[in-house]
Length: 546
Image (cartoon, rainbow, N blue to C red; front, side, top):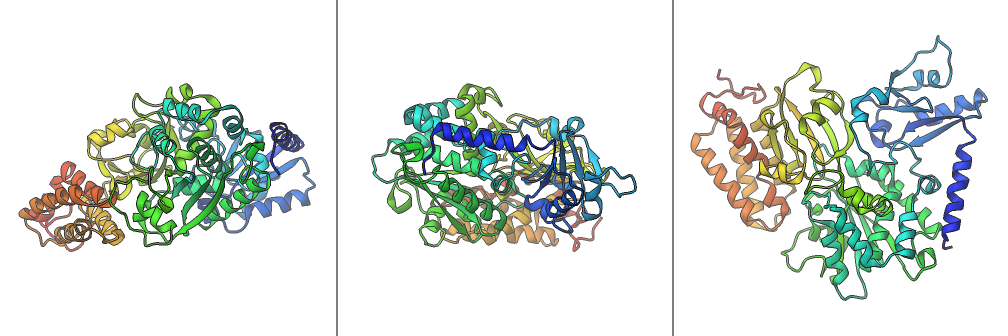
């Protein structure tokens, strides 16, 4: 089966007609965050209640992430636009029934909440509004029309030009211009090329890619297929960690559906373009987020980086040219082709275009999944969208970029969240993890935590990373135990410089960032630990000095 545009439109019209049969829609968040805190299956319970009450005009629909994860389980009611939080079985009936005697869940008006009004969803455009397991709903909101436009009406060079002009940069962390990477693969002369979606999200506190895959998997599949057409690839892999069982399940469902509708496979849209997708499960190795390590793992080899060049663009899977982007990057592709590169380039800053998805976590009142224009300040994210510090605490720092990032102190709260600004103070955007810390956090202990993570996740292939990260961890551990001297700080900085400049891959090259940023902005805490035998935050229990 291979669809025509008319047939694609017919599927959309039938789905919209089906939805119009209902005057009311109850959307139940069925992303992992909400499912994990339900006392039972809310969707099933609401459907049962609706049947018992003969409420045929009400649709009970499972949807993806509704964003405000801390308030889950979440249920959204339309057309009223009310969002109910902390919904459980004993309060779910009140959402359907108007009986005043029923216990009711807390209600939120998204139109009055800065958490929602300050966002600009592009990647998350369908999250929380469509059923991620029904391809018809994705098609009904315009899904796969960009793929049709690309295959039937555009030359690959036109697509490459659109992506370049949009200013989209890779959302996996490094921020490399997406159009340049695509063009490098497209220029290679090879009869076999590959596309890889890097869904190996390993940063502590990060859940952006997982949520997108759980909430809108077809947006990623469509972006990958467009990329395949643009660069001349016939096959692709989605490399996702096995710890994401719900994301894997929904990806498998989405691939089967796309194949059934002829949107993956041979002669897509009755063209000569063939594109197939395969899922590869990772075992959770952080280093497999690195491009050459991910290739090795897909090929069945140990997930270890190799020296570059050659780069994957010329020699990747089986020695063939290979394009690698992450989940968020691919989810941006369809909107760019649909709405135009100028539209996307008009969002964000001069050098950081578009929006960025962040996993807002830590000591903040409203944790969850957010998407804001590049250049939005850290203060706006934490105090407007996030509602400020939880439990009346005091902001101390924000950790961005995971183990590869840095800690941003309060004097930089007004920093724009874009690639260049973060780099200027020793941090990085990373894939989008954003952990808020308050006065109860010890910054030496924070640096020690991330260094312990990097030490355990190092593949051990190169000496600077294998030995250097362990030596840095040992010094940090001495400091938190009150066994260090001031000379250890100089040695720690020397090690940071050595590991950063001589490690083989990005893991070792960026591992010193949390240490360097805390030394730069919170050096007084290091001094207090060493000279006064005192932890200002009271975290390091072995220090008893005042």
